[in-house]
Length: 393
Ligand SMILES: NC(=O)c1ccc[n+]([C@@H]2O[C@H](COP(=O)([O-])OP(=O)(O)OC[C@H]3O[C@@H](n4cnc5c(N)ncnc54)[C@H](O)[C@@H]3O)[C@@H](O)[C@H]2O)c1
Image (spheres, protein in one colour):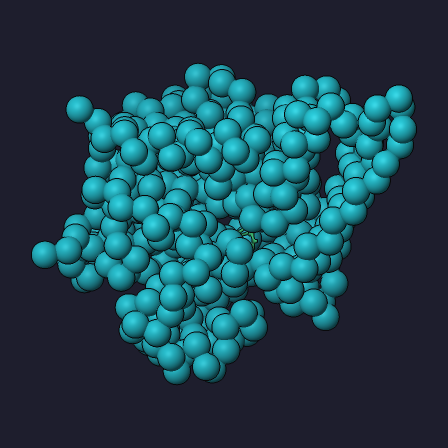
C-alpha cells in the first residue's frame, strides 16, 4: 500500500498554503495536470506521490481553509468545485502568534501559555495529525507571515543551553517561528522554512537538528524575482558583462505584502533577497537596490521590474530590462510541496541536519559548518539532481 505523507503547515490558511492544498486536492480528484511541479517527472524511490499527501496545520485565522483561499483570490469557486471541496471542512489548529514579531498580522485562533506549553502543544498536534489521518510520516513547512529580525546578539540565541533556559523563562528573544522549528525537531519531524523569518537557521536550533539527525532546510522560497536573478547573473558573469547596478522593484497586494508593509518584517525579506548577487558575480555590486511595495489592487498578481546596467567590450554601456508579471502563490505552492517531499526523502535516507542540496528552492540557502551558500541556479539544480539520483548504499 502507498505510504502517506502528512504536511503540517505553519500558516495553513495563507495564500501559498491554500494554493498548495487546493492543487494537491485537485490532483487527488483527478482534475489537475502536474504542470508547474518541478519534480513531477522524477521517479525517485521513496519519494511520496502527490496524491498521497495530506495537509494540516496551524493558523491564527479561524475560518475554513476554503474561506481563507477565497479571500486570497488565487483559487476560486471553480477550483473548489473541481476537487478542492474538502477544504470547506478543513480548519487550522490553534497557532502560536506574536504581534511583537509580526506587527500587521493577528487572529483569534491563538494558543495561550508560555513557550514550553506551546512546544508541547505543537508536538501533540503533530502526533494527533499522524494518528487521525493514518500517516506514515510527517514534515513541517513554515508558510506563515514574515516575522521581524530577532536581536542577533541576544544571549538566548547564543547556545543550546541558553536557548533551553530561555524557553523555560518565556524569553521574548524566542519567536513563534523558532518555537515551531524547535518543536518539530523535538518530535523527530523534518522542518522547512519557506519564510524569511529566523527559525532553523538560528544557531541553537540548527545545532539541535544536527544533534537529533532531523533534516531541516530554508530559508525564504526563491520563486520570482530572485529566481530570475540567479538564472541571469551567472550568464552575465560567464559572458564577462560587468554589472554596474541592478535595480529591482516589486508591487504586490496580498496579505504577504501587508505583512511586509511593516518595516521590521520588510527588513527580514530584504535581508534574504539582497545576498545573492555579489556571491554569484564575485564582486560587490555597489548599486544593488531592492524595493517592495504593498499595492492592494494587485492582490496576488505580483509584478517585478529589474533594470540592469551593464558594461561590455571596450567599456560600452548597455541595459537589460526584465518585467515579470507573476502569480506569487502559484509560483510558490509547488516549491513548498517539493520541499516537503525532498525533506521526507532525506529523513528516510537517514540524512539529518541542514539539507544543502535543497538550496535551489531558497533565496538564502541554509548551510552547515559555516559553508558559503551557492546561489547560481544551474549549479543548485545540478546538486539537487545528483542527490535525487544517488541512493545511499
Ligand atoms: N511567492 C511567494 O508567495 C513567496 C515567496 C517566498 C516566500 N514567501 C513567504 O511565504 C510566507 C507565506 O506567504 P503567503 O503569501 O502565503 O502569506 P499569507 O499572508 O497569505 O499567509 C500567511 C499565513 O500565516 C498566518 N500566520 C501568521 N503568523 C502565524 C503564526 N505565528 N502561526 C501560524 N500562522 C500564522 C497568517 O494568518 C496567514 O494565514 C511569507 O512569509 C512569505 O514571505 C512567499
